[in-house]
Structure formats: C-alpha cells, structure tokens
Image (cartoon, rainbow, N blue to C red):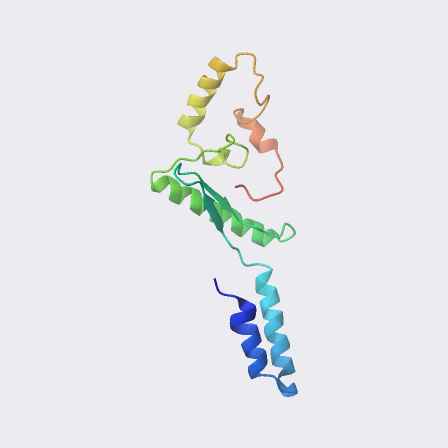
Length: 144
C-alpha cells in the first residue's frame, strides 16, 4: 500500500522546505485534499473456503458524484462476478441492494419457492419479490 504522507508529502516538504516554496506546498496539499474527497477505494474480504466475497466501497454520502461512481463500480463488480461463473447472493439473504442484479428467471423461481414454504407470507412481508416495492424504496447508500 502506498502512503501519500510517507511516500510523497514528507519527502516533498523536505525537498521544498525553503519559505519560497510555501505556495507550492499549499497547492499540492489542496490538490490532495480535493482528490481524497472523491477517490474510490474498493475493499474486498472473503470467507476462507466457502467462496463468499464481500465488497465495501466507503463513500462520502454528501458527494453525489462519488455515490454515482461507486454505483458504477458496483455494476462492474457484479457483472464481473457473473461472467466468472459466480452468483449474486446474500449471506444473510438477498436484500434491496442486490435485487437489481438478479435474473428474472431467478426471481420467478424464488417467488414460487417462497409461496410454497411461506404460504401465509410471514417472511419479509411486502418486500423483495414484489415488482413495484423496489421502486418505492429510497436507499441512502450505494447499492451494494
């Protein structure tokens, strides 16, 4: 992992330590601050042996450009996982964030399965498997 502070900022400050370079050092700090506020990092961790991979993308919730970019990255990750033979699933169930990545065939199969095992609709009442429900929910996070 590369550290901005250790690999760049401190050596630059040492190199440009004369007062005549204060403006340059301040400009570099301002550029770093700007990009730090919009750069995405994708953190992935997994379970040993079961193939479960979790993806986390920390974002600044006030930065709508960053949120949209993160959603785009999520799309890429989901499509890559599927193209490599993976499946979209949820360790704790399929939630609102992965629903959009499920095939219509899977949704139909699951609806039929749920109707058999949950005839009184006790589980996740009014959620997940009703077409219009997802459209009515406002999620204030990246859809992953």
